[in-house]
Length: 270
Image (cartoon, rainbow, N blue to C red; front, side, top):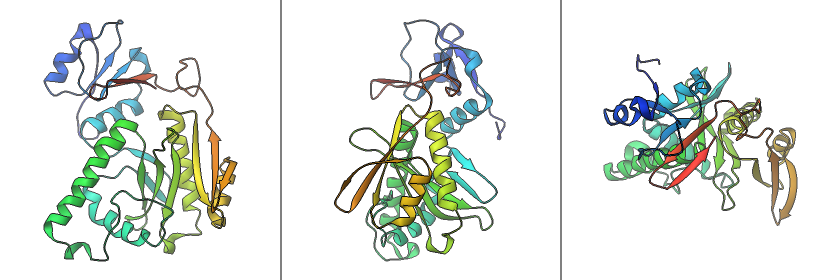
């Protein structure tokens, strides 16, 4: 771990619950059908050997409330937002108000500069971002992520997936006008697709594109999305993801793992 922390991989017989109670980061190994009560967000694997460095790093980052890195190259970094990003995100979403096709995280915003907002408004917006991080990222493990330009170390857009009523993640993105026509949107969409294909339990993803947004139509078609139907001004696309994420013999399965969400009473197999 970057900060010298550690992740313990333990079974119930090895006292994983007691280590969790002491505030340690633990990945549990399933040792039978009967499991003790587990805290929300506990990660379980079927075999200790399925825990690799990438998986352990992600579990530890979630444990320490650090943003996950979704993908990167020499030009951009795509990562989860943190509460420290609130000012940059506010400015970006102000800019996005002129492009309503992409919904942000903070909702409708005024034209007021961040520094000009009353303290209680800034606190409320920060709390909204914090809630999004806690419930969207931790529960679904996907969401809208920030696009950071490496050469300028600044937030220039967002890319990721929104939750739909039918449970199919919907791809969306936004890049500031000054940074368009550089292939950044396509690069980040590929990173986002790679992430959900390897880490999220979903067989397909969707995209909803304005029929006059020719740039976005070109991007989704180049990424392998297939047009399903049109509804007025919007066109709907789907993309099937390769591999069965629940099959331990599938080469795409990666680390086979379960996430227990006690509060929701649900079990998710990865």
